[in-house]
Length: 320
Image 1 (tube, one colour):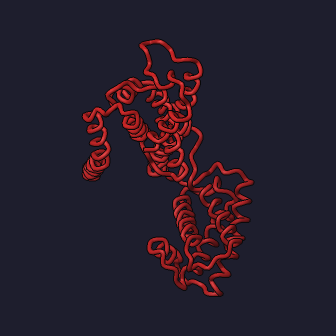
Image 2 (cartoon, helix red, strand yellow):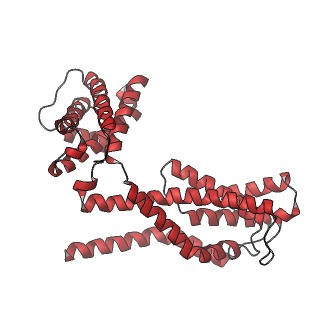
Image 3 (cartoon, helix red, strand yellow):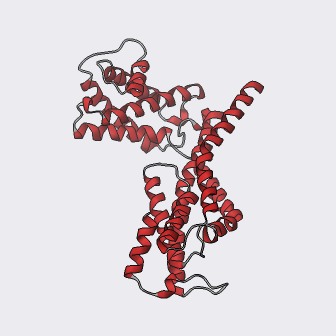
């Protein structure tokens, strides 16, 4: 829809026939059209890498944390400056939470009460006191060793779980109207949450580089099939320069928005939808067989992946 509207608007504003023409064999387009296409392609490539990179890095980190948790459960490379900032933010957040606890204290393990709040989003008289104890425990665990890098392997898993639990509880508290937090208190808790996330939600540089190389190599190997399908098999006519640019601008904007909100989307699906929209807007018609196959792939991908993953997990759990 967005690509179709953009193409109609472009036709109204820019009335240069060459922009709406199909490519002629191996003849290159005019330099200014080539510049536009290079720019729009670059935007799609950048946001494609950003969004798909999130998925790849997330999967690798999930595997690393599951297989070698003592090495990757916490960010052991945090500099001393961040550790000092973490302790300062911890003290500030602890003061806010203890004030809300109204002098109540918790005997025993505070984690069940905090976990219940994260799961049920129901604020009660035990939430703030339990969270206050948990925040103090985290600060004590970090302060005991002076830095995360010096923490013994046996303590890493528990500390990570506590940090993640506190971060999630604070995230919900900042949105909870029943929490009765002022703007200044929310700012203090947000700073502490960022410090917690810096220690738990991190990605080593080598993982980022590996994913970038993998995405680049994958595009180099499989580009031709995608280009032919998108450019020639969605519509009944060949893609024009204007249609390609409008679809790419729409795809880049859509993926950028999804990237900002942390939503996983498929670049190919978004771009294919944009191409279909421009074909409909241009009156070119659609090749229903290709559209049907793309739609079926969208519908079947999720359940097929669920069945395969479930089968593999069941098989491996019985074998090992």
